[in-house]
Image (cartoon, helix red, strand yellow):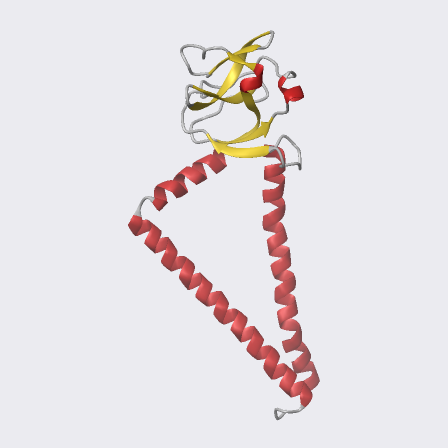
Amino acid sequence: MVSSVYRKKRDRPVVRIVLGVIIVSLLVLPVASFFYHLNGDSGDYSNSELLIVPTDSMDAGPTEYEISTIPKDSIIMVHILTDAEKHELKVGDVITFYQDGIYKVHRIVIISGDTIIAEGDASSSADPPILIEEVKGKVVGVSTIIGDLVSAVWRMVRNPALLLSIGAILIVIMLYYTFVVLHILREEEISENIKSGTVEK
């Protein structure tokens, strides 16, 4: 009788750990899949960077290109190009580059030799020409959902009252799980004592 009770108590933390691993897996796999697709169906992030687009210069409605419209506050994945990759760019690609001290995310509309002219889909005029070597990266993925989430978090951070409320909730959650862990450890200690005979059965 005591043995079966001990076994149940002993197995309870194991079940919780297994459930925890399953839950974490269910959370991690979709996130990993999301970033894989955002990175152009590639698991190599060594030459990639995440950016948020703060303007609506690329939001003029859907296009026929692989990277279509990019609404304001979208998160984009940019592949940093090698010199060889820069010469493989084509009209319709969305590129990143510095011009007049501004970091731009615009679409290529003309390629002439080593010169590129880019333009925002919603812009009324094209950017001044740049050299291919001035291109920094190429956009390979866009997410409006994550961008909206980041923007919402940023707005919350700027609201002290809301930030304090969220902080208080997080502290309560941390305290609760600390109590749960201590409770599990206490059960383990009691179970070990029962097994060793130092506590009355």
